[in-house]
Length: 152
Length: 152
Image 1 (cartoon, helix red, strand yellow):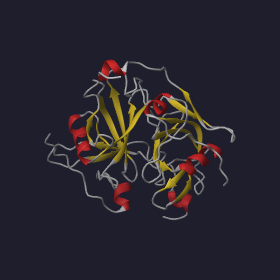
Image 2: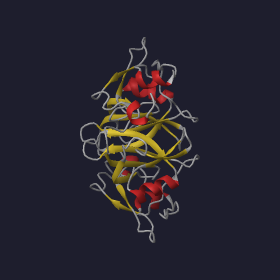
Image 3: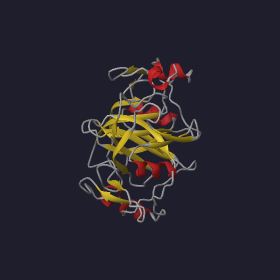
């Protein structure tokens, strides 16, 4: 892919916080955190990372393209599963080192485990003597990952 | 602070994804990303990071305590401004390396710039010839940072 999207250089703090130049800050590994939310329900779906080129591709394609830290490769979400994320809006924060993607999630869900969201458990604090645990939230699995990804 | 909250050791992939032990994964810098959202409106407020001890303090205090990467210190949100974040629910994702904080935001807002949310701008893609820009969203400043933080 031949991408041309241009970002601004990082300016002074005031420019970054109060200006309208988009100057995303990538960390020491060249990454920026991106939280995808359902644009309609506001359900948080997944948190992943983008490098500069995957952010460019996301903007040009209009679908979320992350950088897979585990596989060290571009990760066009849904390329395998069909569960693409159409970009409705991208927001950035005061210091421009984080992104919110408001998306229209295609297919049965965002999570490779077969659920609509990756955030399917909540934390339940322990009582000091016992360990902190998790509890299920959401409606369980909405698809069979084996069917979608072709492996168990 | 004397904190006692205990987390589980990281198990195999299946345990981490399909189990109910809370075994948060901290990155090479000892940090986990935490996105705070308004529990009622589902407005994304800010994205910050926690280390293991700040996550413990958050669970025990019932208010968000981050780790400030810039200041390299614990950051009890609202300790200076009064704009604390009462924890309503904490969610974690499939591989337990990200957190969503559903919070009740006290005071006029979450952002040190004086706005209710740090995500007060959206990205507007350029046309190939021009740079990608930002546009304001939200209702502008809800408090004067100089009043709250005592400096301009």
